[in-house]
Structure formats: structure tokens, C-alpha cells
Length: 168
Image 1 (spheres, rainbow, N blue to C red):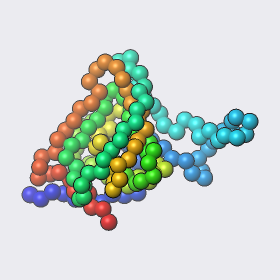
Image 2 (cartoon, one colour):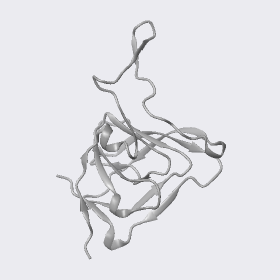
Image 3 (cartoon, rainbow, N blue to C red):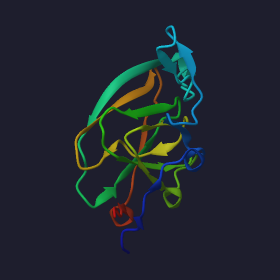
Image 4 (cartoon, rainbow, N blue to C red):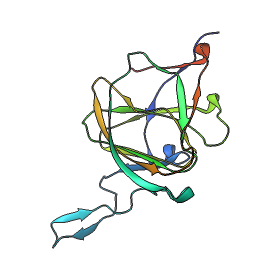
């Protein structure tokens, strides 16, 4: 058996909706004017969910090194007790690999090419790969859950079923 391949698709609000919230600001994003008219507040861009088992939100910065090309998906994880938000702080595209919540289904993995102005908020239980920086070490602002309970479960893909991402 050979490793399956997948081509990333553009990250869009509709395409990502089954997995979580797309966080992006563009001409269509509603905003409030605040601070005497000097600031546009793009309000409530994602539903942060960290309250299960008395959890609290954590704000972190992850610094991710790019994987070697071709990128191979070897592991997927999910957070059953909370959402998890990633917003890029670097000016580089990156990959988002996800699968629906519930029992892990390797055949349902989708890969998106995210632009530097797009962040993602995974719904609780959504399977995803860790940060997939491309070409350059990249920083991400991360909001996730702190507190008691097992909130990170990983599944390792069998060697001959690890997915190769085709970057064109």
C-alpha cells in the first residue's frame, strides 16, 4: 500500500465551518467604532469554549518550525473539553489539517491552505494536526484550555497510511 496524497484547498468560512470558526478581517467583516473613532473593533470573531470541568482560557504563543517537504501527516489530535484557537503572528501561509469530531476517521481528513491574515478556532473535539508552518518558522497566538481533565488525545497514523500533502 502507498501513502495517500491530498491537495490543500483555500481556507474559506464555508469550507471550514464543520470544523470551527474562520478568523479573518476583510471588507465584509462587521465592526464597531471605538476609542473616539480611532479604532475599528472586529468583535466576537470566534466562539471560545474552555469552560468544561471548570477550565479556564489560556493565552500562549506557539513558535512552529516547518516540517520537511513533502509534508507528511503522521499524527492527529483533538481537545474534547475545549475549542482551540490559532492566529498567525508571522506573515507566512500555513497548512490546516482537520477531520470531523467523533471517532477518528482518517478518510475524512481535509487540508486547507491558510493565508497570514486567517486564523482558525477548532470546535471542541475537532481532530487536527499541530501547527503546520511552511518554509519559515512561524509564531501563532493560541487560545486554549487550562484545568483538570484530559484535554488532548492523539492518534498516530500507520506508516503506510500517513498522508502526503502535495504543495504546488
